Image 1 (cartoon, helix red, strand yellow):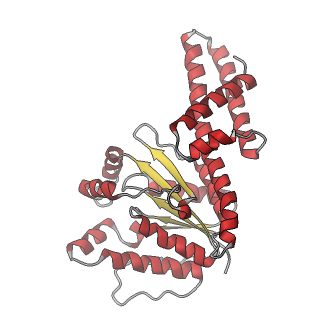
Image 2 (cartoon, helix red, strand yellow; image 1 turned 90 degrees about the horizontal axis):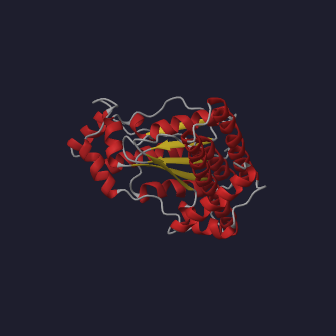
Image 3 (cartoon, one colour; image 1 turned 135 degrees about the horizontal axis):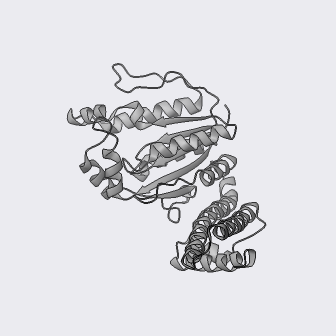
Length: 315
């Protein structure tokens, strides 16, 4: 049985989970590997899910059957559907897919934990992506999918109240978690960064013995580094935007503005490249504050980056 990596994608209905899953799947293929995407809605349509609830059937049993199917697939054993099974199981899936992407709401932590246990049992990689979207935006995007493919707004409201986001500081098994913030004004997915995280998860499989403790510190450092680089990218984009707006107000000519844009963009890309390669390291005290979600961490990171940016690109 070849090693795999389980990639969980969670979030409210309409948050953008399926879009993210498709984009990261395309990136994996582009990089020369094979992914498979299991979307909860492909096993049961929205209408079928609502019908099961109306008829008083147990949705927990449905979820367990889907889990059993995925368990069988990644374990390389035959799966036997139940008699009169309502679930639409995929019939043709390549058995050599390295990355197994599971797209579901996963609003309870317990729903995710069983997949972590599966990864640990099979010595697979494991990571989570939380597509964090505000309720208003989720409702708007849900409605845009059309009546057949959308859920009732009340479902989104109820799920938002129950949602248990990843908490790596409290639960060590959620260390490989990455939050993607989505809003009505920002629908950008950090696909390159997400792919880097998935590769780290694949290369650092879950281990069900004492060796896990010895490897956890190294994994935590790698995850923290990815998170810091993601925040640095956002800050550098902000700096670039600020400098361009500042020159615009100073009535720069079009030609001078283009030259400036090229200059500061090259500086931004170089700083990010050096951080990713390890040639440039964020001070450990700043990394620690960001890991602990200390609000001063981002402020200190921004100040540190501004100084480096001005050294790299004097303006």
